Image (cartoon, rainbow, N blue to C red):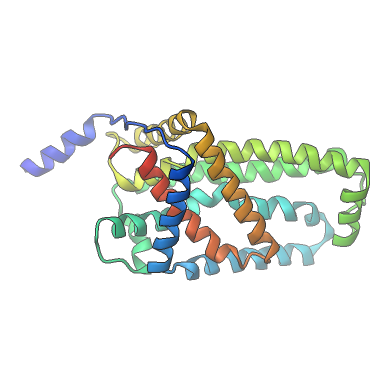
Length: 270
């Protein structure tokens, strides 16, 4: 009973984590530590199981009609938006390895037994909503800039996008809007999910989710250059993954996921 009262007391007060200042060397170190975690416990199979169904979905939509063609690139680019959510199992693996606990791929699913799973799922719903909003925005931009009938095939659409003024307007406007979505996802997710995996923050799940998001945004505002560098690394990795028909993401996404845990450790004081 004493232990239960102590835990209840700890959860009754809202915790406000302390933000640290970091630099580019810390970002590189976090990435290297993430690669070390991946080498110690390869988790590419998890992302192969995630990526190939998505590839099948894309191909299926393409086979169902040309209306889906404009969403190919936004759908692939959306990996960066849902990356923080897709990596929650990796954060748990890195946390266990950091504490010297036994680690196996199955431990990635331990997060579903966390006391904070409701807060994690609630924040996950927000990220899914961001992803859906991005797809809707991308479709709206395409409809507003490109003439009807320009997406009759992948080849015709690529030609229309790359060789016409309307296509370049689409590229510029889509890149600007996409960057806004990416910044929002990065700012709200780079610390929030690892923080929820790591510690209790408040009495209720909603409060915990809010504190986690506020802490993530505060960490980004306190370290704009370091977070921008991390964002560039994520974007470059995504580009490489798309260029390899998503196969490269099976390695790059786990490394980035583990690296995000170590970046969180550097950004937020224990």
